Structures are given as structure tokens and as C-alpha cells.
Image 1 (tube, rainbow, N blue to C red):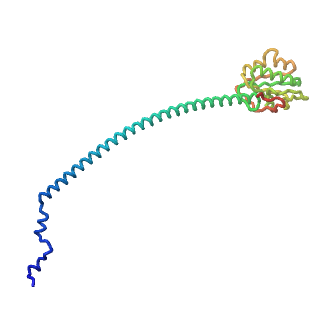
Image 2 (cartoon, rainbow, N blue to C red):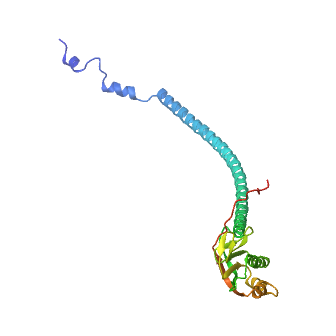
Image 3 (cartoon, one colour):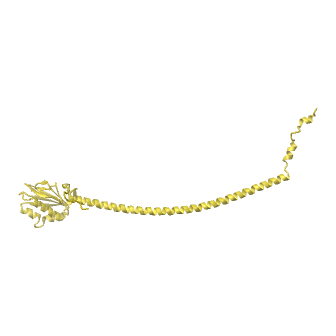
Length: 247
């Protein structure tokens, strides 16, 4: 029979003393550990130096390229700003010229419409009244009065508030009345004219003029200067039958 000591300690398992012996540092083990530590430290330092040098170089190059790009972009922006500024100035000048041209065209159109009798007019002027109890004032006398007013600078003329007088207006005798551009006007004849009041009034009163002519036919003339005369009657214009604009 095996004894009790053989049963208590199996031969295959290491004892506690054996484990301590295997963990005890020896010179070869210490030397290997030191060499591994030194190798690891050297590799770490070298890697950090390499990484630091590469990062610094890359950072500097990126900054240089960035500065170059910004400088080129600034130059392009400066050129674009100058171009846009010049374009804006040209547009402003063109707009002002266009506005001036449009204003001149509108003013000219308004002037022509007044002269043509296609629009109303207002301004200083006179009111001329011809009393004709003997019915001796005819179409020729009224035309004479209108021509005298035109010569004195009248810009718009209307008779009895309804017959607008323009370049194409004609005067005809019609029994006891007078026809002006087809409109019948009756006595007394009231002529309103826009222009310089003093000059227009003087033109009606000068010696041998309209006043004397009407007086010689038994009529009377009264002239009233006004600060504001308003003419609303429009001329009856006809399209030209033969005349055409020149090309």
C-alpha cells in the first residue's frame, strides 16, 4: 500500500517553492528587459520626431499656398470690383441720360400737343371780348384777331370756349354766325389766349389794330389780363390725306 505522504502530494503538480523559483529574476532576464525598454524608448522618440518634422513642414507649405491663393483671389476680386464699379457708373450715366432724354421727349410732346390742340393748356394770358351789335364782324375779322394774337406770341387760343384754334383751323361765314373748324360760334365773341398778358393786350390795342378795326364797324373790344387762363377745348384734327412723313 502506498503511504500517506504519497497521497498528500501528487507528483505532477509543482510545489509553491517551484513557482517562486521560476519567478525569481535572473541576470539574463533583467538584461533582456532593459534592452526591450531601451528599444521601445528609442523607437518612440524617433517616431515623434519624424511626425513633428513632417507636420511642421506640411503646415508651412499649406500656409504658403493659402497665402498665395488669397492674394490671387484678392486680385481677382479687386478687378471684378473695378469692372462692376465702371459698369455701375456707366449705367447710372446712361440712366441719367435716358431720363433726361425721356423728360425732353415728354416736354416736347406736351408742347407739340398744345400747339396741335390735342391737349388742354393753362397759363397766364388774356380774355378778349368783341361786342358786335350790328353783326358787322365776320370770319375775316376773327381770323385777323387770331393772327394778331399769334404774332404777339399766343401759344393756345380758343373762341367762345369751344373752338380751339390751331394751324389747320379755318374760318367761314355762316348766316348770322361764324364757323370755326366746323364749330358755330355766336356773338359776342370771346377769345381766350395763353401767353404774356402784357404783350398780348398791347397787340390788341395798338393804333390801327384790332380795336380800331372793330370800332370802325360799330363794335367794341375789351381786354382783360389774367394770371391764369385755362383752355380745355380740343381741336378736331383730321388725318392728312396726301401728306406723309419723310423717311
